[in-house]
Length: 386
Image (tube, rainbow, N blue to C red):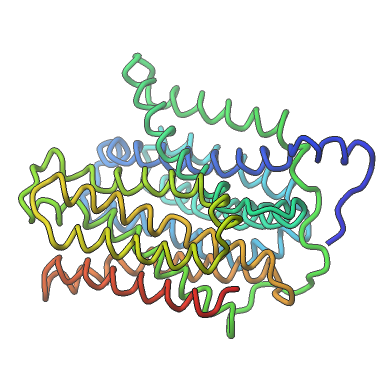
């Protein structure tokens, strides 16, 4: 890949503005997804739908994201990271605002689908931008980029909750935050997003992934699935161990905080220790965390286990994307699209599948299976990634 070499570009690169711009895009996506989580109960009441109907509507987000990921890599290469990210982020944030007030079920469903489509494009395009920035810098940056998404996940819910407490309406809070986020992107950081994609690539998404790309996709699905299982089943598992209901919901929050912290320091760890040692350490820490979750009762120790497990799994996904960006011979945009799509399939299908295991064998079997898959994935990654 050849990067711009004008005096202006070199001056900007000296201050790493492209790194800050990329971190900001990850932050925006995290904030927006977090805001959507706040909107869900309000939307359910406004639309007057039951849980089953709401669940059917929510599937449109994942469906839209998966479909858009099939061609988001080609789109980014065709129009460049800057145009793709600015346009898809604009649609993403506009649809988020629409979800704050739309009361017609059909229009809400269409908006949800658009929300999913645009989020999928943003996800792929920002990872392509991140891979280009990492390649330009010659440094490990991917964990820090993904860490900003995790930070955004906390900031979005916190900011909107504070705005609602201050007396703003749901629509006003969502619109103000969305406008501010896009204004910063459009007027400050958009000039530091790359106007090109991965120019040497001509191929689009492959519907029949194979080899190393398929392997990385399966690993991504396993690691994404662990997040989804903790989100969907963590609180119930804590309650089954005697934790009060009001504290049980903190399991995913603790897990997520640990992931954010781990990712923010992950790049330095990889640079100092290397991929292999970090993967081994991640697997050991993760299995220790899940062991504490499974082997203790009450609130304190299992919660500490979720924190340790979050630290363990935090850098496994960023390492996969960093490997893609730096591995010679891999079609980066196609690989990112494929790996992310397979990973999302794991995120969507994994937790419901675990529900069948929970029904037959209990929640201990669910978290035992997750622990086994994570450590097996870490071992497989250690043997393959160099």
